[in-house]
Image: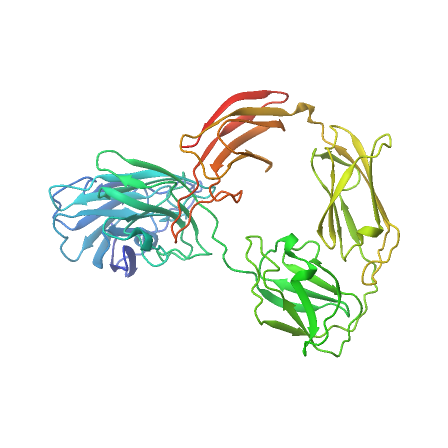
Length: 565
């Protein structure tokens, strides 16, 4: 016996589908009990009319699925192009749905009915790809086709939006305000196709539309554009490759809370991770509410183990009865995207707590003692709970027979030092690191719990490592440098280099394993790949990715040619 259910809905607001599902008869049938778990995604096995049909008069579309599906998810995934308000009713017979428009179709028009890739079966498996039916009510049909691949670790469900540029001013097109005329969704394999397109020039976006409103939300939705103009022709498919950039961060960090810790310390919590190098004495001030007394500070630094909490330490204990204000200076503290905190006239009022800092200050050296497999250029790190005095410190590194190793310091913050060799750690060699302070007294009066720490570590043996080399080709040229990224497919290692022009390249002393090589034209010169910009519009940076590349112990892989399209 067939089960029958009906629903009515309205296609509105562009090509998006809204509606309320009214079921007559029975709802979603239950899968039979027992048996192995269902892991197979649903798919469409038949549809009417046939894609490519012309002179279609009957406003009915039927889809038959490979199994019972969740009806509401099918309805939510259906859309019709060209976009216009539609009233429609759909009926269900077992695994078949019939979509019937309640008004006549326009004459001499190409229609595309698309079922996105987010419908699911009764076991919760989502579809592997979207499917489209293209038909025309006239004698001819638009045969333009866009197909391609989205390079992303999680491509399924990402939207592909296509905007025809004919008859509009392209510079005014903003996907944050204008819904796409044509769209589809990417499947689990990263592939997509848009069919039934009129010939012409298009602007294409890949968007992870988080709130599913059909519009781009800056700072929330990940987005990618094409690397050049997109022309659709009726005779051959247009093939594109897209990448997603992370949601653009244009929001400056904000102060979430101010928490006094003692008579000398106050912590400031920010809304997002901060750039370590921007956390400096010059970025903040603490003064009384009248603005007549400014407290001397000895340190402004990130609290160890956090990226969002800044601690400010005064030179001496402050009065606990006096109200103070925290002032942030314009252009001072930045987030990791380079956005500076907005200072303005905003002040944060607080009083210091009554406790004095009597606990000993802890400090940590990395690597851990007796660590092995230290990389040739890996830095040594020293992080403390309070500001350190570099003038009172002695840092020594020696090899296994006591020979001193030339080193240099990088002061990353008031409480964070980085120690590097002037050359590099020698393959397989053991080293001894000794850090000592001539006094336990620190700036501001706090004391170290220990004045000396010693660590032993061994540099990794790179004699088993491999090389890989080749040539970069690009006939179009680049306004900036070329960035080459050799990325380990397991373990997360990353090696980087730049070329000023196409030519020879080489990565030396690379651990054996599987890799992919990414090369991009860094047009904006910021050292990071740009997937483009929605508005004002900017093309994505051109790129090429090849792999997997297998590197075996002590081998040198030569002659790897990379061509940027």
